[in-house]
Image 1 (cartoon, rainbow, N blue to C red):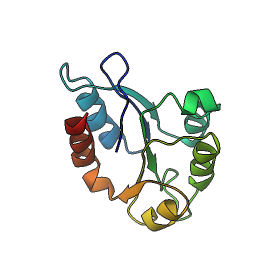
Image 2 (cartoon, rainbow, N blue to C red; image 1 turned 60 degrees about the vertical axis):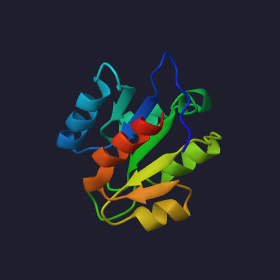
Image 3 (cartoon, rainbow, N blue to C red; image 1 turned 135 degrees about the horizontal axis):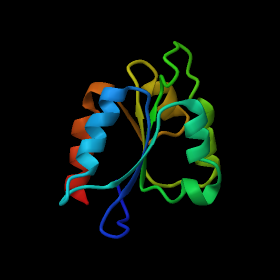
Length: 129
């Protein structure tokens, strides 16, 4: 994975509705040595706003996309992934889902991980930047 650093910090977009997970990632982002700029979208309207145009989309260094954003069994975040790809985003898109990672990877996500592994994935990404 490649991350470009801006002001010595990567810019992560976290599209996720689990508040405990958001809190854990937010705490990591505030670390003075290994922190990163974090934009959180915890519902579909916030996600659409965070992806409003190609300049905004391409300002992120990595995007974490919850495949189960609304809590439904349907894959409602697939249009968000399509919007990200249509904007020309070439950086990592990490799908986080208990059940939809295969579909999100087939639609263009860089890789899929289970939600229980997201904190470890962020740590791994920070170690290579």
